[in-house]
Structure formats: C-alpha cells, structure tokens
Image (cartoon, rainbow, N blue to C red; front, side, top):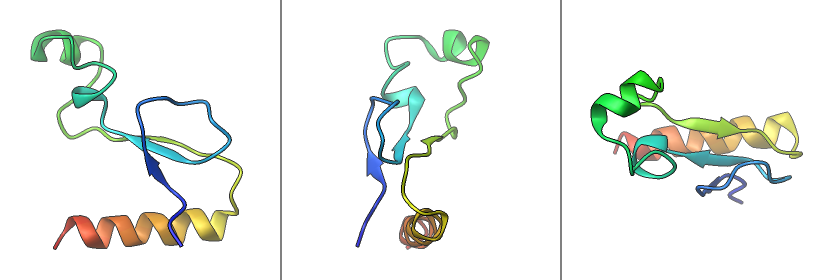
Length: 68
C-alpha cells in the first residue's frame, strides 16, 4: 500500500512529497529559487499522521523506484 502522495499542497494529515522547483516555486527563475533556498534537487517532505514504519517503508519504496 502506498502512503505518500506527490502533491503541491502541504499541511494535510497525510504525508506529502513535493519538488518545490517544479511546483510551489516554478514561477521563479532559477536564480530566484536559489536565493529562496530552493535547489533543483530539493524534495520537500511533509510528514503526516501515518505510523513511522509505514512512512519509512513508503519512502524506501519510492527511493528504490526512483533509481530504476
């Protein structure tokens, strides 16, 4: 079962993962993003109410899949 979601809105009760450079900060130039502390490889994780074991399992699955 997948618990993490790739969404642009944070603050939900569910764990969310976003890539700020292409979502919340996409309207900024690369220079403006860097000034704001947003790098091209940054991923933001907003931890929700799931159990730690479920979150860690889902993160592990996502990282494995991202390397394929």
